[in-house]
Length: 144
Image (cartoon, rainbow, N blue to C red):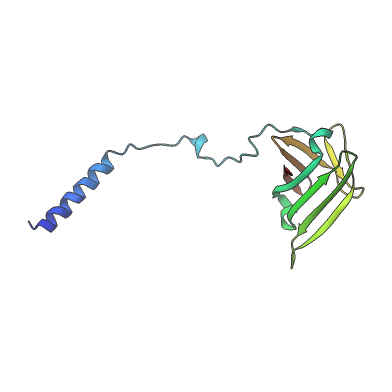
């Protein structure tokens, strides 16, 4: 046997032995599912102190995602808000949003007189707004 064939056979034998020594693993059914880290958070109804400040869109879900590409809000403690929304185009365009906001005792946030109230929930620096057209998850934007 030539040295080249002997080396090839030896390499094949080593590869087979290394594969045979690998333990097989089976992933449990509950660990095979992709988990949404936002759904694993402990969400609670928002209180007045939770919603004031600067917020940026982290996730846009549902029908709202078909028309809304980005969103930022500033919510004052005195009940005024200002924001900008990037709507799908062509071309995509920003629209300025402003007005007054209210938060009911049961966590319904209303941004402006003409808007539909949204269920407002908070968890770990996040604000989730849910309505009939989808949901938004906003993260608190820190200004330093």
